[in-house]
Image 1: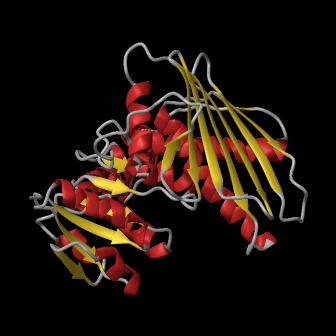
Image 2: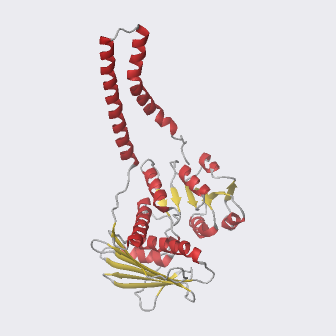
Image 3: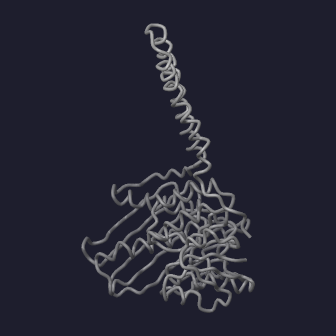
Length: 375
């Protein structure tokens, strides 16, 4: 298997090394963007470099493409590489926002190959083992809770929103990955304005089971730590994470056998999961602004349905205009004596909108990039 990789930092290095460990025949074509990419490729023997992501577009031997980054160049690469009929693995970032998430979801409907989100916690064997237990028959999940504390040392007030947004996005994605669903979002912000003390609680209410809660406290002197609690029909699972290390089972929690392999290439993940996380975050922002519970409406968009609706509306408008112009042409021809060239000009004016509309439909497929088969 040969991967095309666009990355802006070395956070995905563990994923790439694990992919090659599982299949020694795996090779990579990585876009070189500086010394950080050399660090990313360290320990990957079957690696080649290219100068820009445009070269990934024309490579004919790629089995899949992976994109990670938040710059304008990364988003441009994401949009263009999304036009390929090659599996696209995306590391969703908090900076993407709901608009970019929806934009990628529109591409899904036009692609034969999937767009799959990837998260750093998929490489944690303990979390993968927990998820496997929760997915077993007879294990009903009632409530999932993540409590996270972060130190404020070295941060300015301007840094708070960025740090909180990234932590919130990662943990809400973990809740969704473990099976949480939400119909309503409620927030409680008890932070002190203008200070380096942040306290935020997010409650995700479902219709039946699978509720979620996320609580964050950021202040000077606090450790960087997270605790995960899952209440299920089998009892309560409890895990803990120190700093950015691996998750471990707490002494008073039910034992969780770690997974044999990480779940980097999760066959059950879909881009709709990432969209749902961004919808939660959008609901959180509205709840914080309005100080009330927000009802969520998960209605995935379909580009094909939107396009058909637009074309039907446009076609009806063109036909109506053509009919009105034809009546006007007949009325003028009956009442006003005109030379032949003028009548021909009026006739062309009558059918010009219909002709241009049909021509646009014929040329539309030519505006989409054509791609050869992928190996």
